Length: 267
Image 1 (cartoon, rainbow, N blue to C red):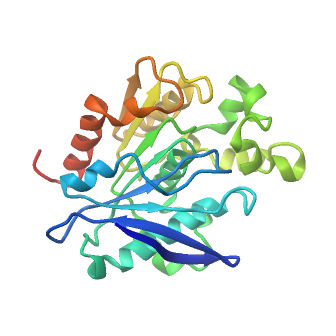
Image 2: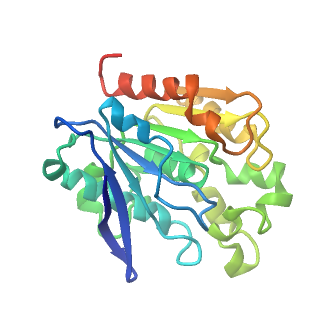
């Protein structure tokens, strides 16, 4: 593992990633991991999908600014800059220069979905990245229990979504305005942004998740189906918001097979 590679400095804050590479070979398919933590905490350390490296994937675990440093859309901008940096360094580190897969959990899952559905939307590009927009293309997206529709969440979980119980409250301007900004709430909702360019999406969601309800996974599943985009929803029986069962056994095999198929690799 190559730790703490600085991919951008934002407002004086070095943004870093850890790069995991297979021990032999080159031209590895690249998977980007985005950690969770409600946009207010969390770490790039010890990504739970690092077993993929044993399967021949390169894995980049990236950081982004948290809500005490910036609010939406700056976390999306940070992830975009990580993608651009990674694409530019493929020759140096030996992974493929082709579009990566993006995988995230909870808050990171939302960011992964946003990367997937905004890569061709100029209004969502980080300042100065217009000339690099082709480097933002994503091969496929995997979301573990991240919210997809904050407008819906405000209706079905107002007691969480509109209070400090949810990290999205601060992410969407709640600490600044005293309430969630309605424009940010809509703009940050991947389910409301799905179009014909949405890459293939794999969703994992626990059927006992009380922090982010199953309707969040169902919302973007429905949006993808309406747009005739590939989507798969795995309902994890007995699981809440997180836990090792998402990354073990058959769930891991489902992730692996999805990635292998979209990188055109043998099973």
